[in-house]
Figure 1 (cartoon, rainbow, N blue to C red):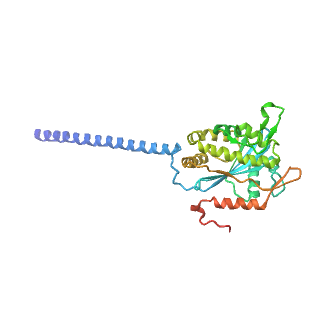
Figure 2 (figure 1 turned 90 degrees about the vertical axis):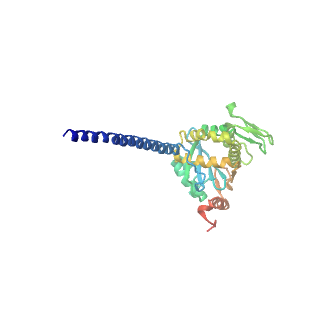
Figure 3 (figure 1 turned 135 degrees about the horizontal axis):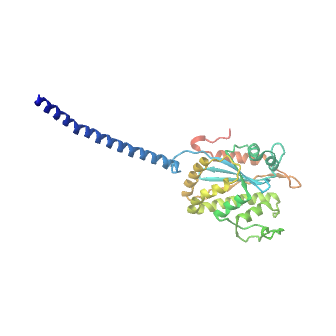
Amino acid sequence: MAHSAVKRKKKRRSQAPVALIYFITLLVFLALFGLFAKYMMDKLNTKTNEEIDYSDTYIDSYNTLYARVNSKNVLSDLFLMRICPEQGKILFIPMSAFTVDSSSLTFREVYADGGIRKLKESVDDTLGISTDYYCTLSNQSFEDVIDIIGGFLYAPEEELYHLSADDDNDISLRPGKAVTLSGKQVRLICQTNVFSKGRQGNTEFLGQALVGVCNNAFDQIEITTNSLDIIYSKVSSSSSTNITENDFKQHKTYIKEMLKKQLQPAYSMVPEGQWSSDGSKFTISPEFKQKVYDEMEATKSSQKSGVITKD
């Protein structure tokens, strides 16, 4: 009897080290699992924090309509910006608010009636294009973005002179003399009757300004890269837009990739057509619409569009 009791006791003791080994193994497993889980969470957080690499990701060209409106919510002017990441191109099409659509209404009248969404539809129908995004710009945001980039160098072909009731709004530029224009100066020249061509001169100047400012931004790679978030906040502040924060994050990645290539990507196409005798309405010519169509086709991604045709 005594002998069997001793045997059972030894048997119980022999199980203790085995249980301890199982327990230690369980702890090690849990620790490894925790480390793996933390690693996966870190990877997910990294992706969430805009560090997804889109450099090898296909993206087609996209169009954004920007409408500058004054403090009374009246349309001052507008422009289309087409970005083609694959070819490293940025096209600007500046437009007068007095451009008429197929209903003979000016873009200003269309905006007054239905806002930026109706304006987008009118511009798309007038140019024969499809706009992906739209955004209104206040005078202040328009000026701020130009000033962040540092303005642009401009030498007018003619004297530009205008005295305002407010001295701060005067315009005085000599022909052939290059000056760096601030955001406010660009805005004042865009909206003031100072050109011999009338409002067509304002539209042409807007195109020059947009190209100059954009290419200036691409000359300052580090400054522009670090300013993209600030520019987005300026543009989206109090704006009517369908550009979401996720859209911006993707677009910012494409622009950063273009910045690395040290390009001068911007160019413009100024609308051609006929102004009314009193300069109150502008009708875009069919020939210019064809040019826009051809350029849209030429700046499609070859990966998606295949062989470019006019069919």
